Structures are given as C-alpha cells and as structure tokens.
Image (cartoon, rainbow, N blue to C red; front, top):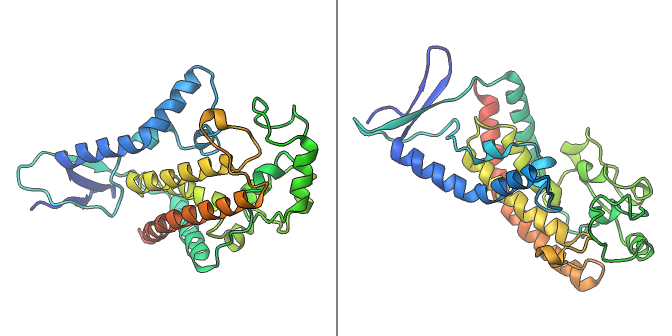
Length: 290
C-alpha cells in the first residue's frame, strides 16, 4: 500500500485520497448541505429573503461555495492500492492565528461539556429582541407577531429571562436587558456558555468553519446540521407567526408550549454534544500541530 499522507518540502501537508473515495465523499457531502446553500444563492440572486434560513448564511459567514466543497482535512488517511487513481489534497499552511483559535475552541468545548446544561430559558431571547419595539422596529417586520405588543411585553415580564449567550443577549432591546438574570459579555463566553443553550449549540458550526479546511468538511457538515435543527426550533418558538412558511409555533406563551420547548432543547443538546466532543478533540489536535 502506498502512503496516503505526506509532508512536502515546503511543509504543506498532502493527503492522498483514492479517486473513488474522493468522488463518493464529494457527492455525499454535497447532498447533505446543497439544498440550503443553493437555495440561499438563488434567493440572493433574486434579492429575496427567508426569515429562518438566511440566518445560516448572513449571521454565519461561511460562504455557500465553501460549505458545499468537500476536503478531507488533516488527520485523515486512506489505504491506496498500487496503481490506483488518486486525488492529492494539499492543505494550505496553517497560520498561527488558526492554531490560537483552535486552542480557544478546544477549551470552549471542554468547558461547556464539563458544566451542567440549563433548560429553563424557553427561547425567550427572540421575544426579548422585540420587547417594547414598534411594528416598524421589529427585525422581521414583514411577518406578524403572535401577540399584540402589550401582551407580548406582559408575557416577557412574567417570565424568568435567563440567557447565558452573549451573541443573543447583545440583540436584546435596551428595555429588555435589565430583565435578564445574567450579564453575558464577549469576555465571559468561556465561563458562561453551557450545553443547553440553543445558540451555543448552533455556534458549533461557526467554530468548525473557522478551522476549515484543516478540520475537514465532514465535521463542518455535522455542525451545520445541528445549526439547521437549532434555527428551526428557535424560530418556531419565536414571537413571529411563520406557520405559512411551514414553521408551526412552539407556543412558549403557555405551559404546554414551554414543556415542548424543553423537550426540543434537550434533543438539540444531545445532538450537539456528540459534535462538540468530536470538534473539541479535532481542535485540540490542530492546536497541538506544528
């Protein structure tokens, strides 16, 4: 068998993949992600928007083309028979910045895994983002809210608002921020994020693609699928009326809806934890590489 991994004279890691494996992996990967990536590209070309799925390509900055591109990443190897047709993937040199990010991601994954998950927020962050806003100020102003503004505000005030995720909390309205029992900041992310948080679980996608291509595309796709699951759940529990788009509401404004949300949150956390463990190990491996 020929070696399927080598380091060139320039220090670039070369991964040699049997052509048959490369083609199969490429097709499998594209089948996982292309539906959403291609739909976003088409909407963008038509200047159209989707209130649920666009988030995965606007808030998250990984391009549709990169998402649809399969590469093996470092740490992968295949047996290559003598004379078999092969594809050689040359990884780009890894900047010191990426190694630092990998170390940070590995630590975040370890921290989240080591602390108890919380399942008491009931998705109120989206409600806090429209709390006491006028109809013109609401982000998705083309879609009705499920409750009138005064009822929506009263409901938020009746609940325990307890978001631990900075990138959700920072989009609260100014009036909603004092209602939150935590004060997450950019600097406290490592200390505050926890595995029940929908956004922390969706962000596995961000941390994975920041380490691409060295981390490989399979893990990015795993994290993307968690983000898809989380985004649909997030907007179903939001105050927006999106049933016409196929997103039946999780009515957190009543107790049965809150119970439904907690169950969905637990399912998401379970799916995310498997990806988090793999991502943490892969990030640590990148951080330790020379």
